[in-house]
Length: 235
Ligand SMILES: O=c1ccn([C@@H]2O[C@H](COP(=O)(O)O)[C@@H](O)[C@H]2O)c(=O)[nH]1
Image (cartoon, rainbow, N blue to C red; front, side):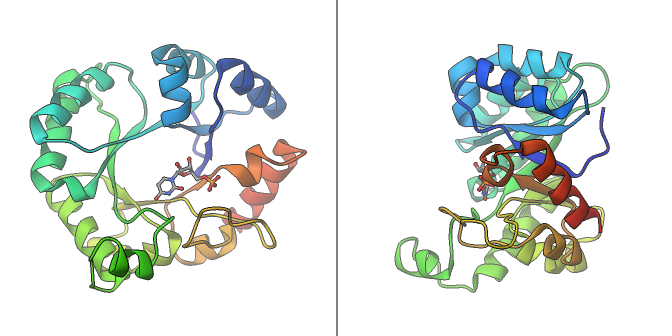
């Protein structure tokens, strides 16, 4: 168990790479994110292994399907007993409610995983919304509306960029979680991300959790970089 609000994205292809990476953290308990690449490559065994090491897990599979299918899938995933899991908010309130029902039905013990909804991916910007997706409302309003739908559906929070955290907290309350990828230290390569801030700015903008991948996993010294991110975020 950890109270860290920094979630390291374990975007690796194999168990071996994950082990090698986590060994650099000297038994420190971490919050880690298992995403599609790792889960599809290694299956549920990777979740079991990381849980046995005592780390908290955000299982980032971003479910998006009709409500009945999402409910059944969540019922299965709940058995993994992870700490946090997610769906796409654009799947509708009915789909998000179904996700929660599945988690409630499948949960181990009396505590279900936190369930959050991805709003607008941090790799999107206003131009992509306008030109490709034909969404002409300001991006911030789209994120707030989808976050509000997630709250109405009973979810615990959303994935958004830190740039939208404050407006979400101001409108939906401080307890509604904002889990924010799109984090870079100054001078880092932003890669495919469009809505990016530093950890310090994410703190100022009230992010509940930050999700950090390549800045840490691609570093020559991941532990030192993690500590740098930690200090920047915690202030
Ligand atoms: O909107 C989203 C939702 C999820 N992600 C995930 O977070 C990490 C970010 O990795 P970086 O290397 O720090 O860019 C990655 O696993 C994404 O799948 C996101 O970036 N944006």
